[in-house]
Image (cartoon, rainbow, N blue to C red; front, side):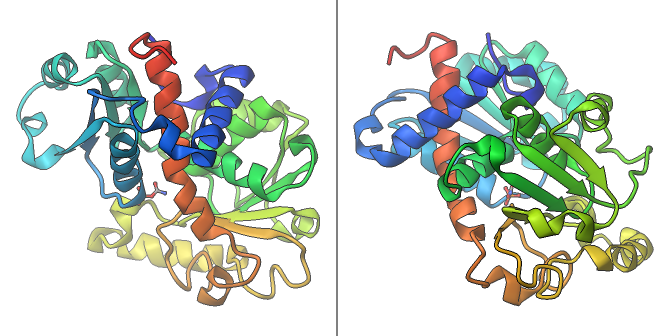
Length: 313
Ligand code: CP
């Protein structure tokens, strides 16, 4: 059975197949309104979400299925063994999507599940976001995607890790403009670091100005992971991080005269990684990108259910 813990586990053809399915459903959604009729998706959250929750729930509804929101803290996942709760879940639903703090817990869920499991974002990977990002890039780039140049500006994290995965698989040029990585950061993944250091399509620079001039897409994300952003215990570290990250802010000076699209996976932290005027700049495709979470989710669900042999088209 196939799961989606991260994109490294998928072949280039499989990733392309998911993106093609997403585009197909997006072009003609009514034709797929019964694709997942009678199917149920459990959506398990240890962390906050707007887009991941809404897009998966609406995707299931629009494909004829049903989604169930499960908050970790108010369910018995908080009391019992993750394996027991998962084994039960997978007897009552046909797919599980989980947003967890630790990838190791996702691996436990995959081990205990009898149905496909999707990573809805952990500390290391955000595969659903990366599928959305490349669906969006493909809609806004004329020509062969291997000629497109994406510049990610910010901190190396789960979002940039999954961008590295998908760009290396699809042969898309990606520049990661971030400070030197902290080897102890929870998002660091050895396989991703190997791809960055060995791929001729992916490069890391510390100065965004080195690469931004040739960007077709400039992409940013939060400087501080969601569970720490409003945490008073993280106040000092947050202040240090904000000072360090100032040269990486997407603002009118950094992208002046650059013919690029501006991307952000949201939620936006106004005045930190991006200024409000750049969110509303004519080059911004941030809201198209966010809308595409829905369409990418549908492509992924179609592919996963197809792989599981649960549906027949
Ligand atoms: N980009 C993203 O995953 O959004 P949410 O955290 O709101 O789900």
